[in-house]
Length: 251
Image (cartoon, rainbow, N blue to C red):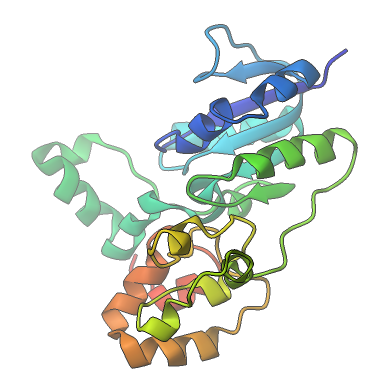
């Protein structure tokens, strides 16, 4: 019997799921597991006990809050899929302006009809067994995580910063060129697609376990304003530990 896997999406762009569907590994994954629930990838979905459940997106409504609790109850392993689930993502920017102010800005006179919770990372709401970081995720991380969990292994986190990915590709350091880049303090393993294209790392994979934040801030303050630095660390992983401290908080 094939292991039973589910992928759920909350408030998000579904970009991480698109990465999975477009992955060169998708046929291999489909051969090895049975997707019971994958709204974007199949027409018929059902609830059973899941061996692994992946959750993409941020929890912003009470319905989503109850849904993730239900998923946890019915799953052997739960994996946070992408920056929105891991760290609040783009949606969590609303936390810094105040939930009600954010609703008024977006919905105007209809703001009172819309429910929006203060957004927390998924690991602060339910027990999460592993996180697949990124906006969007790297497909290889998904395939490796599925394989490890179904073999009874907890996947290992990358321990190197994005800078190591840059070095392996021979990229010029953007920080040394005066560009505010979060690569030295951000989890690597992504292959540094942004710096490789001349764009700075914007920390979508969240902070390293022990990042040298003070040294990073010293470098950034020489080339950028504090407002720009705050925006850099609020962008994709605003509720991540350490990044949240830099970004500040306004409920």
